[in-house]
Amino acid sequence: MGPALAAVALQVEGAAAMVDNQPDLAKDVLQRLGHEVTGVLDDVRRIVHDLVPPVLDALGLEGALRQQAAAFSSAASDGSTGLEVTVLTREPLGELPAGVELTAYRIGCEALTNVTKHADARRCTISLALRGERLLLTVDDDGVGLHAGTYGVGTLSMIERATAIGGTCRLETSPWGGVRVAAGLPVAPSATPASRQEVAR
Image (cartoon, rainbow, N blue to C red):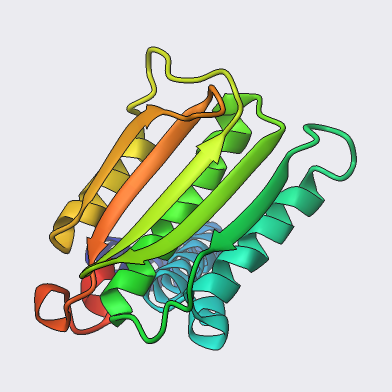
């Protein structure tokens, strides 16, 4: 954000210097700056949303993932992909550390995005379970399975998010024949960042 705002400031100074002698050019510069500032504002909104997703604060991890599942399923209701997404939990998750909730939510969302983009799947299930001091998140689909290029930017971001809080995330073959994203995240408070904002940074 810093370089973007610095560039805007320099262009404003340049436009101010042209107002008297080159008013038309100054007007063109200011109009262009209006579009650039709008872009910067969009970036600010995106960053703020990424720091604390409102749906996660309002509904908790399970509710937020269920909302995403419904959104991906409804997006396919026009017959374009026919994807059906479900969320399964085997026991109440209780109160999870904020960093774990955010990481699990981001991994789940990224996995769903990968399924819709690359898997050609009809079914996808997100499973959440507590095992000792770890939250297990698995995302299974019945799509085309692992293939060259599977480890793209989205996949690497899931792995980085998990390792950033001391967890793991790997891709393997799903029992359904597609891809399984399997993440294990530590739920001990001392092992995780204190806030969602810290993970987002």
